[in-house]
Length: 122
Image (cartoon, rainbow, N blue to C red; front, side, top):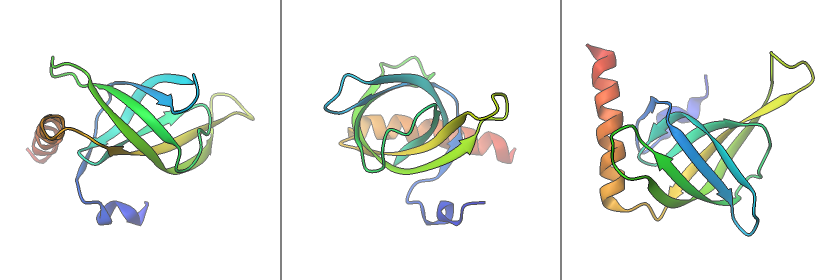
């Protein structure tokens, strides 16, 4: 397991929701689902390496019936993995740190994460 998880400022929870990532200064748009979520950022698995420290625009669709969360982000880590279903293909486990996230949106994410973590303990 990656040891960096213990150094995170915000806890993360396994949470799948829709997300749209737009690579800045390009027209490249990626629609996918999150793998995990925290108030500081997200992890997604995508089919291409969009670049370490790449600036992105994020639209996150939580399942709490609220409007999409829109903010900037920075790709802070990328791990290339073989895709078991397609021999010779790869996917990229990608960590995006939120930038300029509004306080009310951070609170929505914190509520979702706390709810998941609490239900896992019960």
